[in-house]
Length: 397
Ligand code: FDA
Image (cartoon, rainbow, N blue to C red; front, side):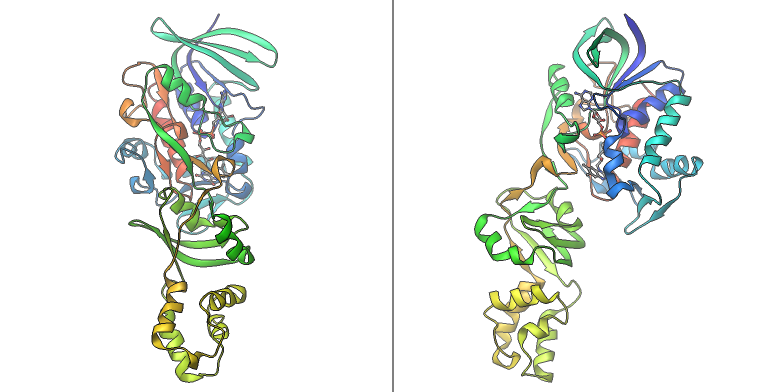
């Protein structure tokens, strides 16, 4: 029977970071993944350029039943620490908007960096490996593995780190394995749901709005007290774009969202001024000075606005302006795990030590990354959580 100090399940962002750190501390480390390559989500992230962290990452950018849980790990291994690692490997990067850092070249550079670091830390990487039974064995664990069609037999380890990620994009090998394992060891779970995901409309609304598919506008999108100011994209299923993905983590079925298009522009005042200047101008033309033409036309039609500005009272103009500045809509649902970037919920943080990610009731068992009930905003925050939680567990496992 093979024996390792540490076995890490899942060679994604969090798992690789943990393996590197545990390896650097002289632990014998095995990291396994059922995929044929490590870091598949890193590869596809950020449109192939990996938005690997965010300059402004702070606990406020994360959702969790316990919002304070992430503080310790984010402080112990910060975005600056990860940036230093990227720079040490000579990977060129740039900031896009809102502190989001992307590779200039390809996300593969981040994977290569992590694989190189694992090699230097003497970590054993086993891919295309299925994880079978996991049991407590004395003070440690036994894990049965099958690589290809070859059963490797049981592996023993003192520390077992679960880094199998969330449920999003099942096509890429996402499973609920980490949650099942947590449940098997009696750890509580916070209900999971797709997050950072496009929202969908019911058929009737879709029929009305489908002609807008492909149009993008800047907007402030709100749900409850939460607001995000970024682009919104009309799709053939509903709404997408960064502002919608962000709000999807806060939205629940039955709730309305507000979409304030043209933030900072008081459309009522603009229409009133346009009416005073040229009352014979069509409403649609006046709106298209600020909005894409198809959207201006749609709003004018929906608001019975086929006419000249002079035909509209202040009250009418206020109603039309509200359809732009304060559009309210009730999404029917989301596109689900098929396209969600992350999974909200997961292993309840109450069951974990925030400094080490170790399960309080099962010494030697650790949960890191997306499988934990800590979910970041869009913009590099989720990778930062993977690095920070992985690094923290790597100091203890
Ligand atoms: P991750 O999912 O990376 O790794 C889990 C690993 O476990 C996988 O390799 C999987 O194959 C393996 N595994 C699962 N079940 C297993 C089992 N039963 N047996 C063996 N292995 C198993 N975030 C961000 O900060 N910036 C970005 O640019 C993006 N972009 C982005 C794009 C897209 C399309 C998606 C879907 C997601 C993003 N994200 C992102 C989110 C980010 O990818 C995610 O939060 C991290 O990858 C989570 O890291 P983990 O290591 O926890 O899981």
